[in-house]
Image (cartoon, rainbow, N blue to C red; front, side, top):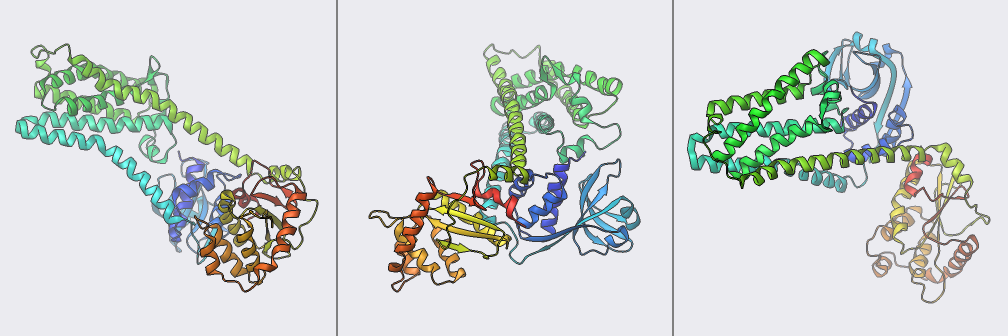
Length: 540
């Protein structure tokens, strides 16, 4: 089955791709996971708006649905059950609809009449702004590519080592190494399937795994892998299978692919594993009455290994080849390392997954508007309205008034600058008032840049002051000389002392003890919230 969270993420990413909006998967996932109405059309709508994609959600008559501007998201009833799924429609005409099937995970053509029968009529229409997309997309995309490359290199490490061992074996023994190469490839395939089985233990609802594990009426990996027979002595057969195949690869790579002692060891272990084939097939056939595609693949590999062992004559060498006592530690290390890693890391990954789920649930609770409003109302209230102080951006008639108290050299103040700008850009009903804690006292280094910023603001050019604030707060080194050279003044600096004194006095009376301090509609922002969280409450 496809879970709602997978479905919502999938259709959101597909729609963004259809609209050619540059957004990374990690950012989209984070926004959807932390939304208070997770796995809903509202979460998709809010996510799109944060990327600059205007959208409208409405219910349409099914006859008019296919006349809507493309592409759009709509809701379908499942083909094999009562579940509801979101999908993206790419093309539609009177006779055919081309849409993404989120159950089969592929694009399909279907007759329009059949599509209308499954459609609920709920649809989301989207139109991208000129500058739509993820801020810092290039930076975030590079980070994703780097992480993907690391995983790719890790996955290729064992195959490359096996390839090198195979080349060395071919140069040493010629065609006689072919049985060893076949056996090695079977072991490598088994390692890959073992990884999928372990992955299933961690994420049984993954869409890719579901394509393999739930593709037929009597095919269900969960019925087998989550049954009472899936473990022996508390250890899962998935772990044992992964250990068996990976340990065999280690022996072939590090002890020599043409080594007769390795052949004897592998033959013995394969003969010992063959009875498991009959047990597993019988259990699936007669007891569970369901088939696990991954499990059957493992059984097929074990039988193919047996055929290789018999045809190569390795089994007959068991009584001929002398195995030295010193060989046992090498065998234990080859199989012990993957077993120990698997037995240790699987619980770690499971806890990490639980922690992520708990974190997402906490974020959803935290981003609930009712909870935010309730906590905000209990916070310290501004007793003296800072009328005319600092720098004010946004419409005077804005519904939401935000006060940002900051220091020009404060790192957290700089990091809060970009999300504050995003609030102003995305909501015309937000006004931001920036008040600085600097004073006219000698030695207060913050006074100099504040005096310059206030002088810029005195020119009553909002575009100019926004640019000045960007240049200061988004700069890494905060070089005042370079800043002042870019924005030269003609006597305005000397006129700002009174304004600085008034801001400093207000900060003292209000009891400002740290920066940045935010006040939302007259109340201090609760400690558990950051300025980044305000997008869930103040964006339209």
